[in-house]
Image (cartoon, rainbow, N blue to C red; front, side, top):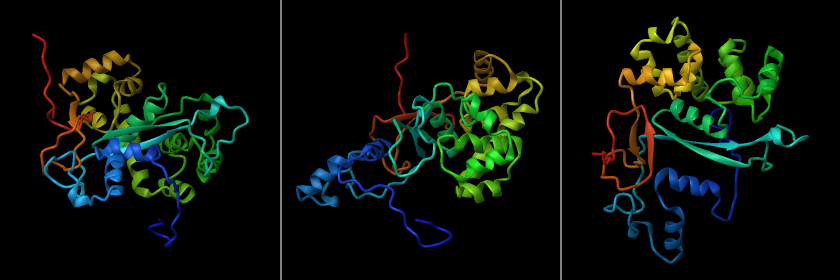
Length: 278
C-alpha cells in the first residue's frame, strides 16, 4: 500500500502454496505457519491451538518483537550475460538471505555481507565496474530511477561522496525516508571513524556505536588500512563482544522456549547457557 501519496495497493505475490517467504516468516518468528494452517484446515480454531513458543498461550497471541528481520534476494546477475539488471515482477533471484539484528542498521549490514562473501557491509560494490559507473552524478541519478541489483550500492556512493542529497535520492528511488535515514547513519558512523588518525585513537564509544550499527571487524579495519585481526584485537581489548539472543516474539512478556538464536552487539547478556570447557 502506498502510505503517503494515494490509496493505491500493489499485489506483490499471490501464491496458493507455502512459498519461501512463508518459510522465512516461520523462522523469523518461530511461528510454525504450515503446522497452524494444517490444524485450521482440520477444524481447529486459533484459540484452541497451543502457541509452541510460550507453551502457555494460544496461537492467536499477538506478537511483540524486540528484533528486526531483513530479507534480501540474491541476484548473481554477472553470471548471466545479456540479462537486464532491471528488476520487476519476473523471478530473477537465485536465492535469498535472512538477517536478524536489534537495529535496522545492524540487520541490513549483516544481510549485505551474506549475499556476497566479498561484500563487507553497506559499502562500495564488490564489482569494480559498478564503482566506476556511479562516479558521475548523472549516472547515479539514472540508477536511482530504476530498481536494479546495484541500487543499494549506488545509494552508498551518493551518501559517501555527498553527490546526491537524501531528499533527491528519495525523490528518484521512492524509497521511504526512514530507510534512507538509517543508511545515512551507517555512512555517518564510517565518516566519524575516518576522522581519527589511527585505529588506536578510536574511542570506545564510537567503536561500540559502529558494532551496534552492524560494522564488521573487517569493515572497521578497512577504514584504517589495517588487518582484520588487528581490529578484532582492539575491539576485544575494550571487552566489546557479541551476545547470543533468542528469537523472542513476546519481548520478554512470557518465557520464550525456542532454539532459534541470533548474535548481536546490542545486548548486555546471553539468553542461553554455554557449557564451558574444564
